[in-house]
Length: 495
Image (cartoon, rainbow, N blue to C red; front, side):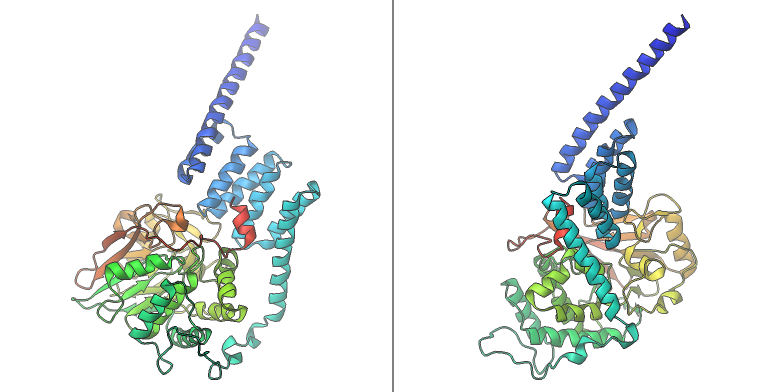
């Protein structure tokens, strides 16, 4: 009798498992459909529910990893791909996913190892071979760059440029600086020239870069400004190479001027394929209005990101490698944070991996470098808020996520009211969290031509410092797709 009972209970649990597997498959199908519709958040949700029913499915982990890659959660994508391979070390897609995650995080050697594995298992796979060769090329290039970059001796590109003797050919009819200076007339002509998909003469581009490097290098890492009672400033978030949307911001909100100041909060370049046009426009306005136009560095104003997400490829395609190197030098001088009236702190990413960071610590950051993997400079560019208290591992695989209690303590210690940050796509273009103490603003609508999000900017008035949100939608742009200049491995890995 006992045996019968045991048999019945075993078959019952088998049926239950089979039922669970069936339901998990249904959820996976649901998730796959969301993924096809580019609804990545719901795809992640349903893959997660499928994994709760069947946590031993390598396929579910691999699929969720790709959805995380699409939403830029590279840390989570890496964890899922690793889990997938722990379950089934022969599941080839897992190696591709993990390699792409590592590439996105700038860990090229780790990515190369996974491509090696795929090539070993599939020696006749042309795609695998091509990815291995491409990744190997990057690893060798990085090693070469390290070998020649003895930092103390590193000469600036500026030293090797002879701007005075750079000729502007007679057939060039585009804008020129007036006696070597940026004027409002030049700015309007340059924006018009870019709008028509024409190029600024390289001499003018170099003049802007050399002058803006000089200007930025004199600024502190934490810029502090005071708005009078009657003054207002417009704060914009990520613009990511979406030049035509930048023009639309100026159309809606007025051109920058001494009475219409702007602060652009990082991530001017990469992904969007008009990054050069965006950054030269922003740098031009910085030169024209040094005390009314502000720029802060984002995590995409860095070499690793530019190599993967398109800006390096775009500058090389439209100008030269030498010009990209100069952009890299200029980006290192962008300030990291801005404090308005001693009450509102603006930065691209967010708060810190440890308590006790004071505004004075930000003033002391030596920023003229590529960002380190940890510490306050890294956090300012990379961290994200989370709804629950405390801190947790970053979904991006860099820095951390910080909760409302972390925000509260930081603001109390520094006698601040709230922070404004960017760095994350928001459906409405902005989001208010942490009981109004942490505001996100994002100014690239329909991000990458596929997220269908609105863009937003914020007005802050000196009289009350209450944020006033303005939303806008994407405008058409010429038929050059986002990521057109990105690293081919990145483009393929996201597929």
